[in-house]
Length: 141
Image (cartoon, rainbow, N blue to C red; front, side):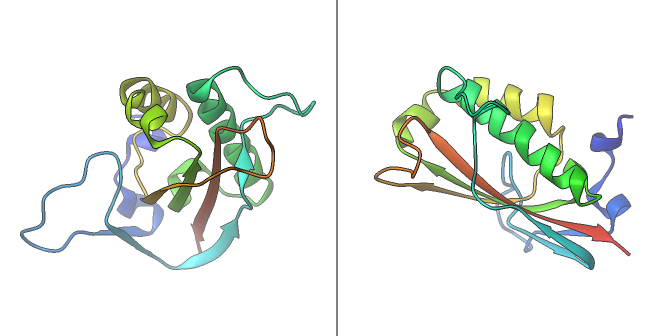
């Protein structure tokens, strides 16, 4: 079993799932954690040279890889994520790419699904950006 496939409880996280609620797919309704907080700003899908990946899914993959790099700087890993907030400029673009997005997510983050929110915005600060993601992680004490 890969590290990212271990239950969230292994990392000091507890998934909050009220009784009788439908099981979420690809996210958690809530997560409880105790430890050291690691927070990113809004992360876009550009590389170290400031070049954007080509296309929505490629930008999501790059943004997630960038988040993993930031987490590592703080001593955190994808399995410590408790929340992701996604800002997209086109909700239809997100919905029409769900299968490819799921693969990109699992390739980078694994099968750990924190609490998530998805918001469509008019635009992002970087005109070429199709997505911006904020991340919060908690590293157990």
